[in-house]
Image 1: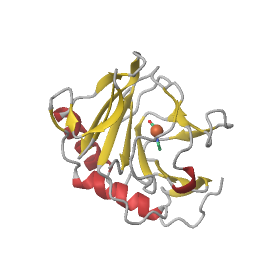
Image 2: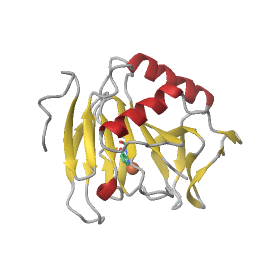
Image 3: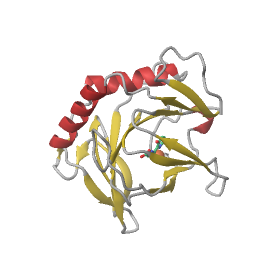
Length: 215
Ligand code: MD6
Ligand code: FE
């Protein structure tokens, strides 16, 4: 892991996880109030809900989304859907501030020209976790994923190309952004069980935004 000692702002620095994956520490802090307001507006319109896996389990993470497509899980499988099945309406538009944050983070990580069409919103309360998985429902694997962490800290589990590849633990704090693509695009990853806590702005929860090019 290499920290950039010459980052332009003292609150932001970069940590390389492997070729294609980098953590931009504090990257989302600059406009955090407006960012949180934008996320709150989206979930006011399309409420967070716990989805069911194709195997019939209720996910501990609650999800919503915005943009042209939302990620949906139900008994028939996983998919990107232009319609929110809960509301039977399109997902809310992606707020310009969210889009520009994702584009700037991608460019800063070497993925200039990223054009996200989906932003998945995940909410973790203490006890929630996301088991090891690949993000492979997107059509274009040349586009990276940009992942923004807000609220309570979490431990990101970061593996490799195979489910049984060795994993490491990466702590993620409020304002950290992970950009993930290229040779790491299909690496297995997950989030360990969220621990109890109280975040000054978000209370007892962690919100994660993942921006993708779904189609
Ligand atoms: C999360 N993130 O951090 C879940 N996927 O809550 C992901 O599953 C993820 O952070 C692909 C790339 C980056 C991620
Ligand atoms: Fe993922």
